[in-house]
Image 1 (cartoon, helix red, strand yellow):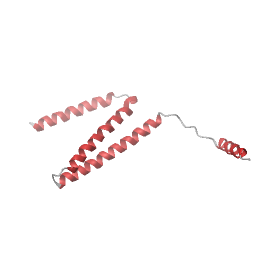
Image 2 (cartoon, one colour; image 1 turned 30 degrees about the horizontal axis):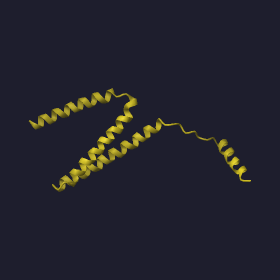
Image 3 (cartoon, helix red, strand yellow; image 1 turned 45 degrees about the vertical axis):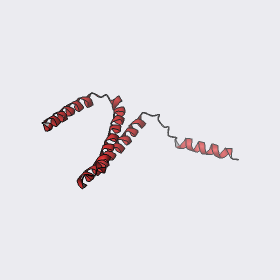
Image 4 (cartoon, helix red, strand yellow; image 1 turned 90 degrees about the vertical axis):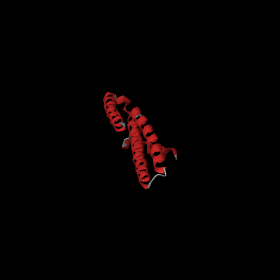
Length: 112
């Protein structure tokens, strides 16, 4: 009976996840991604507990793998979120070569 309940919950979670993901507008994607990074941080805590448990070598190896994969997920998520937020920031103006020459000659003229 426990397996049946677990499979039922998994199937319901998949359907709910698909429905939620398809309904998210693009403007909410970045904040939701940041929230999922926080949830992955909680996953790291659980993986650390599993890796530190004194059950067997197999448990320690699985815990280490879980910590490694969760850290890759969190770091990658934060890098993508940072890059996406940078797209919404103010645009940096690139100086043209003529402006660079004018700025350097103005700086040099003030030193005389």
